[in-house]
Image 1 (spheres, one colour):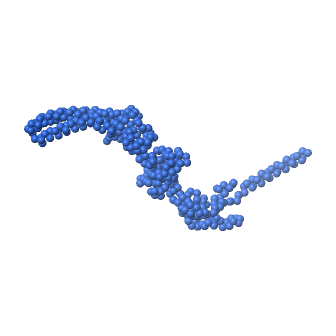
Image 2 (image 1 turned 90 degrees about the vertical axis):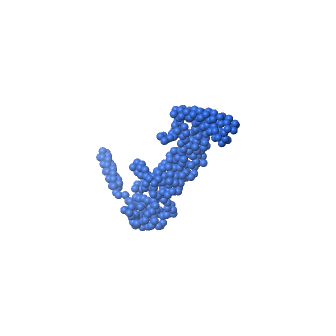
Image 3 (image 1 turned 30 degrees about the vertical axis):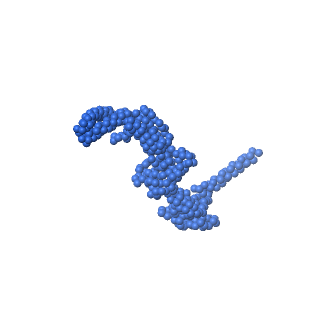
Length: 371
């Protein structure tokens, strides 16, 4: 019994060894080379590029005060719409002591001149009534009195403007009332009640009270690489998408390409601007939104095309392998072709193929995957 058991075990070991050897031998044999096949087709190809940038209003105006002072009241908030001339804030004037002193001195001098002109007029009037002076002399003195009155009035107005920022004669146009210079949306009010503000002059830009912009006239601003800028033409259509707004896109038209490059991350880029020609019906576009612009650089309609993976590039020449026989082994004809536009997946064939040809593609590997 033991003898038969040993024989059975030995036979199993031999069979296992033979099976392992056969399996390894089979795995070591070269697999037959199989290629994918493509048939040329008529298609429309286009090459596009994506430009990153942002949406912003074409005209954004910084509203600044005409006098220096302290903010006493803010009447508007960011996001509100204002008409041109509408009051945004009020300012209390802090007078300049030198200007205030000069204005007060001017008032005192004008008052003295008026008193003297009044005395001269009364004396001249008495003489005129006695017919001791001519009417011409009397008119000159009366005119001098009128001028002295106007000078005192102007001096008082100037003093009020320096001291209070407004005079009784021009209260409706007071410079203490900060008014919007355009109609639009208030984007920002960077000041608060109690903040000091200064007017714009030769030495500084002045304090910005509010930023106002027309959000119905928007532009896309971005940068394009120097390798693609030569293909841009003013007026080219663009498709704008905003990452913050899902499923929202609108049209724009290229209107400006910078003549000078700027360096960014070691590459030369050119600034572009595009006018937004259509906006979502419900609005919702905010200044400064990050956006992408898709622009078609070149387009070829109704052309013969094949997948670019089927092209063999050799120097300046391009070739394809055309199937000449399906019988095993399959034979191929290496044929030169003239290519055109590529969209990164398919490529235009200008010469060398017809719709009846079948072209060899990349080699297939296990589970039908292309090599």
